[in-house]
Length: 508
Length: 84
Image 1 (tube, rainbow over the protein chains, first blue to last red):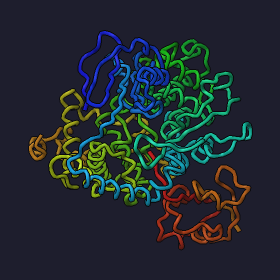
Image 2 (tube, chains in turn brown, blue):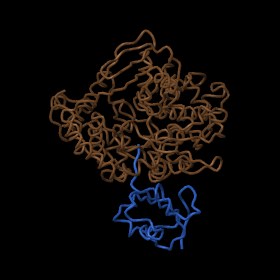
Image 3 (cartoon, chains in turn orange, red):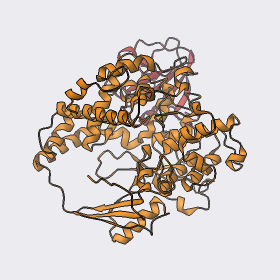
């Protein structure tokens, strides 16, 4: 583990070769994109096999949702980690290890890992669904379920969803005879290979005359396609793909960016911001050219992009319409409208890092039936479901195992790997206890930082404005029912503070 | 006869008539047709019907043979898929 403390006086990057680590001058990379930075690092090292994590111009410019991008198009995207990295003048980390690692029980680890890989390969989701269709297969699922936040959550279904789906990515274009989807790919060492590699029609307005974007690069994931698409009302697949490329290039979280542009479009619709603010750009729902322009302006820190770079909460507060910000604890929520998937309402409200789907993906149970199907439209039992997902997810995340493996594996499959790799004895039970400890420790940190039960809330729109169409028509999020149940299950006070008894039980 | 909207996604798209657009098509089925009957009519393998939604609401495996469709219903089906 590497911890960076303080701030460098000038731009640096951390260069790691096996056991050696050194902070080096990064002046040559400052001001450059993620893509350019990685090319420079590989040239400096003379080693094309190094792995990189870097920030782009967004992290340097103080965009509050800047991400850290790995290997050009894999992102630690959420919660502004790239903003923090950039604020330390830390441009990148370059690493290559060649001497291996020494697990406690190498033979046991190899056996357990092979057993896990077999489970992943034989499972219909991780062995076939994800590698073939990627996360984008959810676009039509969630739209049909009536839980696709559309046009800043003024609707729960998007009429253009099928145009920006996994199925649409696989369609051959008439214009150039190619499909948007070129192939799948994998993060380092992952056997699932759910990543998308895409190419944009060279005649599309976004890349015409710009050969640097007429390339094969990281394609749309579901969250990015939703945020840049349904949240803004844009159903131009190539425009969304171009904007996804740009989020990787500039180093930005496409979820927060798309959701913030969606909020800005509502401000524009209501006349709160005008052409004078946007530099003449018609920031209307569905305007693909406006979306393209705004993403680029945000990455570069130019024009109205400066306002967008502050995220929707600060932007909406500045313009006197805080209720238009679809955020919890300042972070934009992702691609599931909790009016149609009740458990996700409690998930967003209680996520320790602000609205997030990755810390308790109850969509798996409520929509996809993994590990077992529950009704997305009822709040009954969701407090227990969310707690169970949060604790198990904290254990998965702490193990360094991708959460997507949990579509096929449970902690009974993970614990033998951790037990063989690490000191001590690790069982499913100890991993679950570790997950619960992690969740409470994060909560304790938040409480000490000044967060209270009042921050475990949702945008008013989700609590008061009923869904207009689909299975959830007439429903709002029943947070007032779920939250007290959740606090009680967690062993927290009615104000959401872990009790001394709970902290003592968890040895915190 | 009545009309329903048949939607087959991901790898199930191959079971749709060739004139289907964006993985969906309006089809004629007999009055009181059930979910199970329609899926058999289009030769969709039962073991591939993981997520079955009628007007967006989940139809559990045990309900599909008896679940009668209505004119104008939407029947959407996926094999095992996930994302996030």
